[in-house]
Amino acid sequence: MRKFTIFASSLLFTLAAVSALCATLDVAVQIAPSKLLLGADQGGYVTVHAAIAYGLVDTDSLTLNGVPVDYTKSDSRGELVAKFPEVAVKDIVAPPCAELVLSGMTIDGESFSGADVVQVIDWPSLP
Image (cartoon, rainbow, N blue to C red; front, side):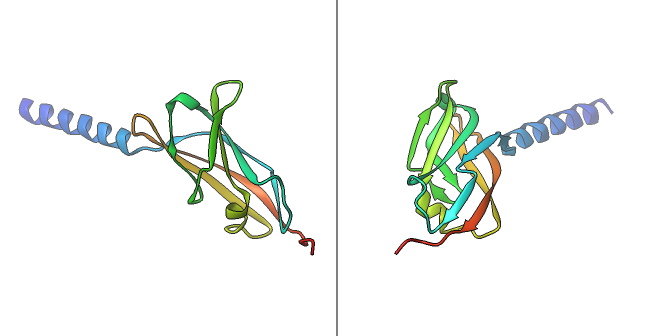
């Protein structure tokens, strides 16, 4: 019985460790602009502010719904700011709204993600 208890304890510890390795860290994000106007130039970038320390992030791993990051920096609190090409993001969304998911890895190899919903509006492009 003692061998079984030790084996069961080892198995539970292993499963807990594997679960922790496979888990994705959930990060709060805020996307700007909060309204994407299709057909209009809104500054060239869709910006994601994420509540994760910039120094912990493997910035080359960042994507927004599969769109690779174009530029990253740290905000005044030391948290991640990631900029994605506006045209590429607008190519993958449609009215009336879209959930945009930031995905990436930490420098320690832990995956993280966070989502925000933005409004998507058809906007007439100028001739």
